[in-house]
Image (cartoon, rainbow, N blue to C red; front, side, top):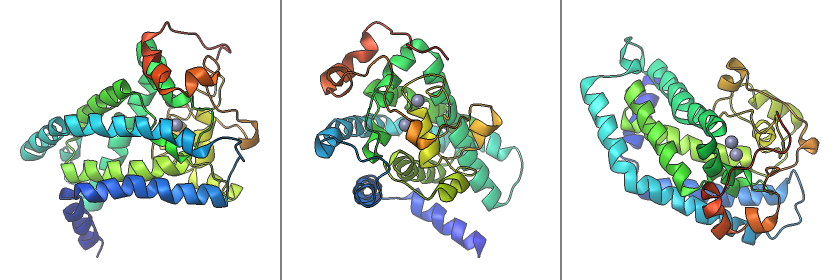
Length: 280
Ligand SMILES: [Zn+2]
Ligand SMILES: [Zn+2]
């Protein structure tokens, strides 16, 4: 039964049509747009569509970078699968162990690690800062990445595939989950506290990721997780701040003409580095 389910997942994601991937992304945005309307965490005084416009622009550039480079990921994945090369092939494991450990490792190397590095390496931080500069975090913030950041996230995903030996269906499954779960944890929604807290022991919950969007250190440098929350707890990067104490943005770029204008956001990586006003 479980085996048949995994085989079905594998078959579907091996040949997932581009249309389905597109529907997952935009369908998720529309879905969370409605949920944000129904159970908002914060009643933002903002022009929701204007705000979405900037973030949708950066979502579109993220998609473009990934579409243009997709052939590299495909090549890498076909190579490791054909040669049974990578961590997943070190031990013979049942399909469900292969599936879970594959997702966990893709999350660790392709998401948590690159995110942590982006916070520690100055020139990379200047690209990643665009994600943090949003002062109204909602579902559209999830894919607000500078195109340069999209490139080095892509490089880490490809490295992860090579180290792990991830087949393409697993990468597609991971990325589909990542799109929706990242919209979920950025969404401006209020879940019952026990639900949010309960979820945060397995996956990155909305309140857990919002802490990462607090405008001051040391909270900016915490909760790097993408899908699974285990890495932050394991590596000591987990922090908690009550939702009503969180202020979104980044203290070096709190002015709308800097953090809400596409032209300036594209240029931030090439402007001089600004140290955080509040030290960690
Ligand atoms: Zn970050
Ligand atoms: Zn975020």
